Each structure stands twice: as C-alpha cells, then as structure tokens.
Length: 333
Length: 300
Image 1: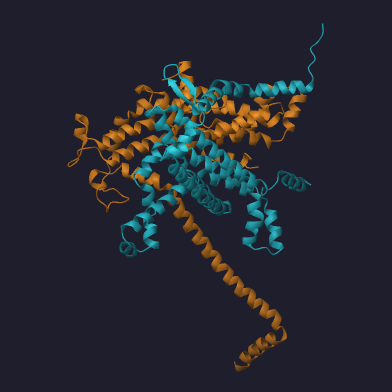
Image 2 (image 1 turned 90 degrees about the vertical axis):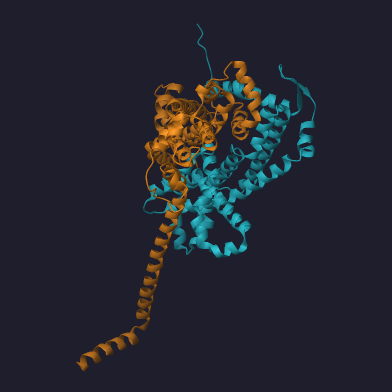
C-alpha cells in the first residue's frame, strides 16, 4: 500500500520535475478554462436578464393599457391591485365602443390607411426607380425637392396647402390626404422615395439589361422584372406608411370638419371629454358603478386599446416579412 | 417615309422623365405653390382676408420673432436643447440594443419585435394619452427604488423625487422612440462580414478595439442616416410645442404671416443643423469605393 502511494507520489514528483513546464501550462490552461467558462455563463445570464427587462419596458405600455382596460372602478383606485384585476370588467369595452362609435369610424381609418399606403407604394417605388437608374438634366434639383419635402414641417405649409385644396374643392373629403400620396407626396412621401431609391441603387442591373436585350420595354421591365424582386422593400414601406397613416390625426383634423369623416385617433378626444365631465346620458348612468359620476380611466384605456388593436393585428400578420425586408433591403448600404 | 430617329441618350432621358412625371405633377399641384405662398407670407402681411392679398413688408415678421416675441426664442432654444440631448441617448441606446441582439442569442425574433412595437403607437394622440397617464414614469418606478432607496429620496424632499421621476420618464420615452433606429443598426451590423472580426482577433485585437476600429466605421453610413432620422423625428413630432405655437398663430389668432415666418426660421435651423452634421460626418464616413473593393475581394 505504502509502496503504491510512494510510486504515485514519485511519479507525480518526477512528472513535476521532468516536465514542469508542460504541466504548468496545462494547469494554467485548466484554470483559465474554468475562469473563462464561469464569467461567460454569468455574462449570458446577465445579458438575458438585461434584455428581458428592457423588453419589458418596451412592452409595458401595451400591457398597462390592456390590463387597465379590464379593471373595475374599485380595482383602479386600489393601489394593491397592480397586474391582476380582482374581477374582469369587459363592459369597459362596450362603453368605449359606444362612445368612440368604433365600428362606424373604423372604416374611415382603414380606408384612409389602405389607400394612402397603396398610393405611397405605387408612386414612391416608381419615382425612386427613376432616381436610382437614370441620369437626366434636373435630377439634382428634383432630388433636392425630395429632401426638402421631408424636412419642411407640414405646419409651415399648412395654410397655403389648405388654400390650395379649398381651391380644388377638396376640403371635407379625404382627397387632400390621399391624392398627394399617389404623386410621391403626402405623409412623409419623400422618405419613401428615398428608401426605394436606396434599394434600387444597390440592386444589380444585369437582370434589367437582359430583359431589355430580349426586347422588353422599359415600363414592362419595371413592372414584370423589377417589382417582383423589390417585394422585400415593399413590406418595409407598407409597415411604415401604414403606421403613420393610422396614427396621423393632424391632417384630418385640418381638412375635415365633418363628423362623419372623423378618424379613430381623433375620436379619443371625445372619450377623454367623457372621462373628465359627467354626462347626462341614461345609458351611461346605468353602467356606472357606485361612487362614480363619470366613466373611469379603464374605459379610456379600453378605447386606447381598441384604437391600437387593428394596427397591432396588421403588424402581427406581416412582421415576419417586414423583418426580413429590413435585413435584405440594403437600406443601409 | 422617314423613320423617326431618336438617339439612345435622348430615349433614356425621355424614359427618366416618364418615371419622374408623377413627382413633377405632385410638385406643381401640391408643393411649389404652397411653398412659394408660404415664403411670400413670411415676408408680408395679409391685408385682405377674402382675397388673400399679401403686402410685402420685408423682414418685419422675422425681426418680430427674434426681438419682440418674448416666448418664441426661449421655446425654440428649449426644443433645440432637448432634441440635441435626446439624440446621443437614442443613438447609444439603439446601437447597444442592436449589438446585443445581433449576436446569436435565443429569442432574437421576440426581442426584435418587442423593441419595435412602441413605434406602432406612433407619436400621435395615443402616445400622448399614454405619456399623459404617466405610464412612462411608472415603468421605471421599480428600477428607481432599487437604485435609489426610498428613504434617501424622502430625505431629499419632493423636488428631487420629482426630478428623478421625470428623468426616468425621459429615459423611457427615449427608449420607446428607438424602434426604427434599432432595426437600421441591426441590419447594418449583420452586413459586416465575420471574417473581419476573425482576422482582427488573430492579430490580437480586443473587443473594445474591434468596436472602435471595425464596427463603428463600418456602420457609419447608417449612423448618419439614424442621426438625420432621429433629428427629423423629434423636430417634426406633432407634440412639439414649437409646432403647436405655429399652429396656434395660424389658426387661432389667424396671423398667417407671422406663423409662416416662425415656420421658416424653424425649418432653416433644421436644415442648417442637418447640413452641419452632414459636413462633419462626411469625412468620417466609410466610403463606398472601399466597400466595392471588399465586395470584389470576396467574390474572387
């Protein structure tokens, strides 16, 4: 027994002595491996904690709006009720739908958003292609105007714009908002021209040249060769234009005075008025809880949620293509 | 019969103008006239409301903005200061977040969507409601209590407490407005070829050096794009007090001329700012020719 121990000890000692350098190296390596490993894992864990807490900050408004919209009057005023309401009050949504006139005005908003986005897609891709592929006299001036139209705040031009549209007889219709989008203007139209130009510039020219050699006219080349390949950038523009059109209430509030043509975000003001002032409406009186003389914050949040819900759904459907589009567009080249 | 001969070059130019046609019509119909009238207004005075007759009065409106109007200049400076303070915050946050999620990590798709979602709220009325409810300040309430114990705040008094709250509120609104910038940074980060980092590693470069010597120069074009986008976004934001001030003069007080003058001062300032940034960045931009070379090198 002692012999064996001695032998092992001797071997170890010999090992140390004979190749101390190598062993030292191994030892160091193993130590460093251990140390490298632990902080790396810790770093990973810390990173995920950090990222999830930041994601929480980003998701908070949605969570808050949704949860508050289901609360009862009692739960809202109770600070111990934070995340999980004691009882769910879906009637808030009935209130909100009725006060907003949700189903009446949602068609206005959808119409405006869909047509406006369509206008931007058709016009800005067309114009952007022209800027990317051709050299012509006046190009710099035209491109400067594109940039100018992005930078000038709409408020600077709104008075003469209003005059222009009232000369055309377009006031109190959606035309002042929709028609310019088909000509590369409208809500940040210049930005979309810029995005399309960037995309087409980084796009290889060979395909179009081949089509031209085969006798394809330039408009047909654009329509059947270029557009199908540009799909990825289309999704990016769709999302941006859609969101901006949906949320825009400035231009509609200027050009439209007719109640029937109001868009949804502007209706939120009505809801706020209802929250701040008691209304003598019997219907609301019936739905109020004990101790309430106006409708409460939960209804306001229900209304807010209803207004962002369609755009959330739309984004949910196209987010995958949008994210791929952002990666592929070469917007950043 | 003589066939019409159009030279190749001329044909190209005609094609180009066909592509430009909608835009040119747009300029004529919706842009040139308002722009012209707005400039004219800013140098004049409306003397007849019904016919909208404008009398030339020179720089009076501009002088009024700078000298007589006690509200405009302080408000203007405040907006400029706020925007310029927010700009680096937005850039740093969005670059950091983009770098975190550009590596191979789990739940990448989730983070990308989560970081973009506040964009859907826009800067419109819904967002104003949310900020009006103080939700942005609520979010980091918890964080505040961790970093700064409540007792210290109670000792320092309500003013400090309020300042801390609004500070966190600003940070949160800054984070919420990072959506587009994060995506742009992300897409450019993913465009950098991995071999660059590998060869730098072989040469013994640290992470820190690699960030300054490789990442930052490679994404500099997007940096410029993001700076301009961020500035435009904050200057043309609908909740911007300057814009409401212009709005107020134009529609409530019907002083169109003065409203136009302030609008133009504001616009010219933005333009100069963007030009200056462009000039400064231009020398530091990663040039396109270099990129072409690396591309060719890769294909070879």
